[in-house]
Length: 230
Image (cartoon, rainbow, N blue to C red; front, side, top):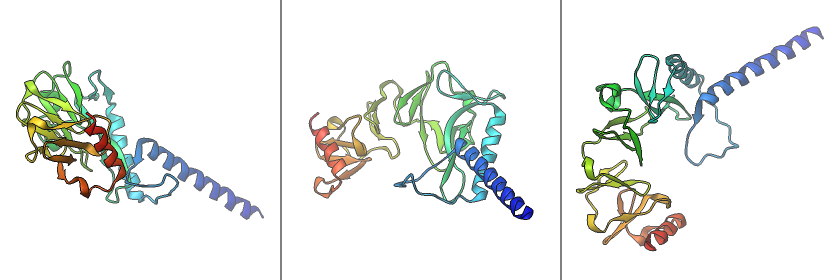
């Protein structure tokens, strides 16, 4: 009987330890994915959890603090752009991380380039300071943060939730310069689904030209109706 009680106690302690570890990891790294039911349970590779904890522990040791401009600064004086990094190949878990250099973290440091006193977020993954327009291109490894040299600084502005323009071009936040649109008649609207836009030649979704009769999704059709009212 004594051995039975000891076995039960050992089991409860092991279960409690596992719960603590899962709660710790999930408080600092979130599950990501498409069309997943919140009630579903996913088995996360222990190596993935360990990788997430390693990244999180490293960043905690650097004692990152947020600046008024939205960027972050660590105890070593490095400036960082906060992003999300997928912690393992199955894609079930991501963890907060920081880009401290332009490009894919291999070019000049952000502290050498960015003027934090004038740095602001414009929207649609674009940013600027008194010298440059910047863009964050999100990817599983945290992505790339770089000077957006395609844009004309003086005339650059945000359009809706996915697009931007300057005096020369229309930009989509991931595709970059759009070459298949009519600049003069292009328009979009904030708050509608699917990154829908239009010009005199028809409709654009996420930067791609699409025929109205090809659209079956009711949400997109409603977004088009809203845009047509503008």
